[in-house]
Length: 506
Image: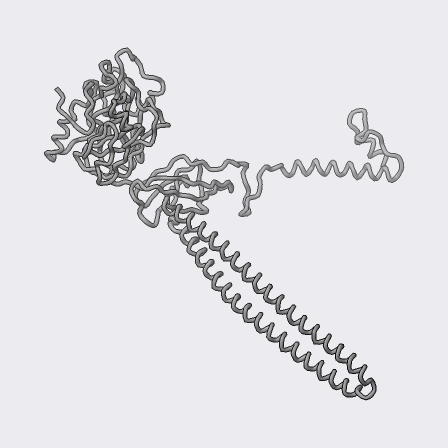
């Protein structure tokens, strides 16, 4: 029977095993091996191989190990921020803090660590002092005991020499009395030492508790500060958009950070930290009225004073509001150099100047009520001067596209295109900005032929908006201006530099 079974299990001309094993034990081993192989084949056919992995909550991962990706962030209003993700997510942790809170938390943490270090050092010094005191007391007691024993021995020897027999009983009584007195003294000294040590330990224990309580209170305050501002969370129908509702209203233009952790359905997690500016619900409409694209050589007086006349853009506010969230873009400078307006209140009809190069003396940001602090070139007393924190050149000298827009929602408030006549098409890096202008509707179309011509422009000359004075007079008469204000190639001409002053164009 065994030989027949082994004969049937062959593949071609060779046995399943390279050589049938001889004997009864060998035959049994072969049969068991063949049975195991057959069982394995059957199991593989019945149970398909799966690539899924168990998740923490007992489910299974479907082979997707990609973490969620943030696709967009929008500050909806004073208390709401929406974050868009690449896939449905669940928020595991989240919080919002301002730059001031972050700095305060860092300072509190540093102070707590310093206090803890001081407390530890003080406790170590106290422990050392107690230990030294205890050792000194032990030494004193031991010394007293040793002296007493020496005196007893000496006394015994002396008495024995005087009268060995007659004074034996007396000496015995004396010795017994001396020993008892010594023991009493030792016990009294030891009790005194223990009382002193226990008193000090009790005193230190009380101080320890007080110090520990102080540290714990500081830690609790720090933890409470770090946990403040935790937002409520809601989800879109598809789960890809998460809306964070902040407990307290944000301040326009103030820097905040929203942090948190999200997980997708497969357990992939993303920890994020997103900076954003506080919502500005009073964004003013502003218009460019003069542009200086070059830096002018210093006069002898400017060299003496250390001042310069650099690139600037003059603005006219068509409505009142806060500049926070507005930005000035230049196609020539690209996305790496975008001027972000500060959180400054302006009034309708107000003129202000943004200086695009911070170089030399007197470059003071006039964000408050003092409009005479700036003393650098092209600054005018009584006119608000704002400075970009950069000393690099800005803007294209004769070819560029400038755009003013709200960074929160992308709304364009103004745009200007200018070029030299011999520039027949925009640089490739201008195409994106050309598209923004086309979508804004400010120009009938963003074709390069609609750009204002700068052939007559020199270093000391600027581009001036022709209808700037008319618009300012309308605002002075409380007439409402419809914006954005349309423009074409004739809207701007080359003129003299008059930053902070809008004059009539002949």
